[in-house]
Length: 114
Length: 113
Image (tube, rainbow over all chains, first blue to last red; front, side, top):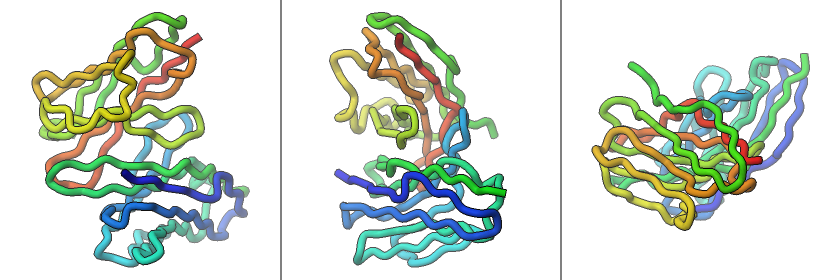
């Protein structure tokens, strides 16, 4: 199976600063690592992901880094805005033709202060 | 394209009552997942299907939970005799073939008193 640890569980930052969330996983065969943002009362929404053949991916102000040797991946939000306040979840999975099941981290509650 | 739909959106039960949740995945998505998300925790997989076949139900409490997807499209998750510990949001997600992304529905928020 897979286990994913996510830290910190609570993160408070000032507007326009950066925020970083770190996750570790156990199964070295995991090959897909998505990040979801979840606002209160809403479903998780995919914001960025990275596959194991990459080390870095950026979509606008979101950067994901993957270190396969350390089995660690991280999300960095640059130039944070109050609208970035939400729960963030990392996940890991082995995607193959047999199927795929996501294992989620415990979540990070991000608050961006104006 | 319509997203994943779920019903009901909310349910309130007394312990011992039964409840069913319904999910309609995105059209053409062959893989369907049910997750349980307790408050302030990450989603935890209960069961998933590829078409009508159960691929993994190892985390489904089989004495009280059951899930079916008889035609490989819609799915129903049933709790036979609810307990307070079942209080959570139940999320359905779907995925197409070998695509990576799972798309989540709005969830059903269950409160067991």
